[in-house]
Amino acid sequence: MLTVKSREEYFFATTGVFISAFIIYGILGTFMQEELFNNNNFLQLLLFGSIGGYGFSSILSGIILFARYIVKKSTLFKTVCGILFPITFAVVVYVGIFGFLPYGIYNVVILLKDKMKQKENEEK
Image (cartoon, rainbow, N blue to C red; front, side, top):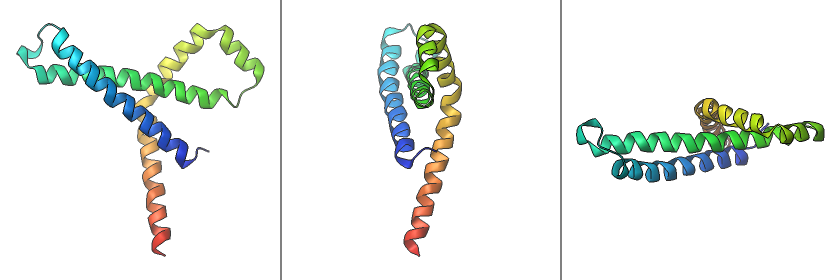
């Protein structure tokens, strides 16, 4: 069971990376790419920023989830993961890509429920 602190750390880390990558890749995509969308720089900023933000946030999400998972495993399992690192890395990336949004939404829902419980307890 994850604590509220670890859920908040996950949320703030992935959100911070998303915002940073969105800004960097949005600017790069707008000024370094040939014109798309009938010279609409705002759409280019949104497109490239979203792709960059999601990409880096999903990789970070996969790394965080894998780190939480691997801590509980045996030394033999960790050694096999180290030896087969290309496969392990591919799994981490794909788990991050496909699990970032669902797990992020799940975390936000749990955090909001926890905040509501705290408010109810304070009112009593």
